[in-house]
Image 1: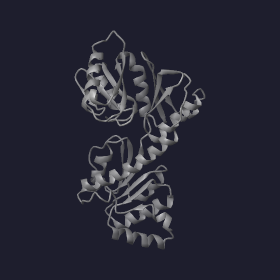
Image 2: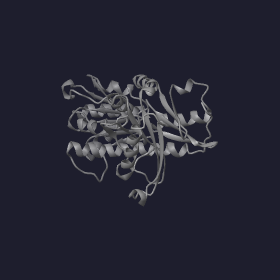
Image 3: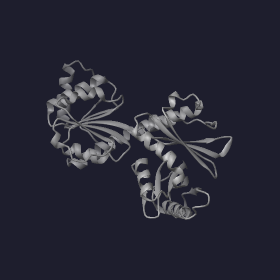
Image 4: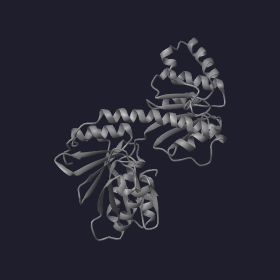
Length: 354
């Protein structure tokens, strides 16, 4: 699922009656991670929490909850992923079910507003056994009333772009889900709207990221672009490097070797890229390195240039093959950063009620 925009739209199309299914705390091996969501209505299901017996059971309970309109709106499933569910993951997952109806329109509207704005924001969902409260917090850094421990957790989620969960030690039935609303997992600046560029967009735009797609030729872009892709037509592509955020991922695959060189040179001068990938062969890499050394670049700076791009054991020259391979390479690096952030934040946190 593409996130809250899809959830809200589908909920509205379902006469404002649906059940939101959310993966909560997980232990061991599980099909999906904390924060994964699925929406179940009387006429449609969007998203997935991993398939199999786990998902079937969640859908079954969600449909039952839909029909209990005048009873409790919530249900929590505590599910071991073993023989009882005919799943061999071996882990344990909590699944939160919440019936959405007209009473929820106020905070859904707040989410809409947050998605439209560029302000860093999070959705805080507080669960007790029989009640749920949700708060959209925009620009949390300027709010003095947020507990310091919660602020630390919010900051981690905004940086990693993933949902986290905190248990209150004083009340084991009380948990808080912290879900970043305007925090893509990574930013990609892609130079080149050729066949490989289009294939990369098709592959990566389905993920929670933001992409700046740059080319000199307006006619090379497709008529429709995903919401998280910004088309930039310019006669001076190199000027866009200054606009990229710190720790960006870059892919350079234009129609011109000279332009590729100029772009790589300018990106390397920034010295703050998370990844710089240049499409081409080992021969192209050696030629570029030789020219860059003549421009004063040292070995440490040049080590940031990846060429050829993609995983070495995934060979192939078809645009889709290249796109899949380089996307896997980027996702591996993104996952490494996530794990580092997660390990750094593994502390036993006690929350104060907001």
